[in-house]
Image (cartoon, rainbow, N blue to C red; front, side, top):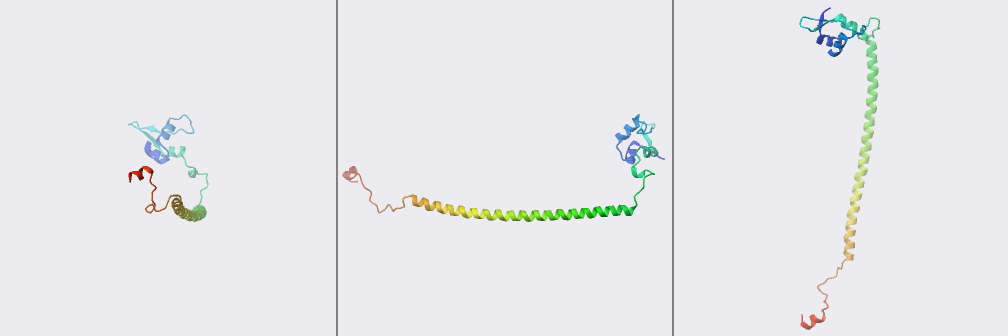
Length: 154
């Protein structure tokens, strides 16, 4: 098998370079990763060593692989469940939208009623204000003059 640089090995194993360095320096025999430093002082790790330490569960020989038809069936049932959930969520959104529109209509009606009442109250205020003030015509009324004004003739 080929020797890989630390970067290549990290990509191959699907782990971070830091993880590889920790495993290279580890004292635990089960977790230890073997590797060599080249002439430039860079780590080189064999692919087989990466497979030994970072073997993925589906790559284990004793595990039974799932056949494509079963995978497709699982995806189909999952898709069906998601479609049902999407349908239910859309129905909830529709119900919420209808409720919001109904409430908005009630509020518009209430605002119109309050405006009508306010206009009526303003007209009533003007009417009552007119009753409270003296509305007689002052041009035809003689003003009673005092004694001094009568004597002086003003």
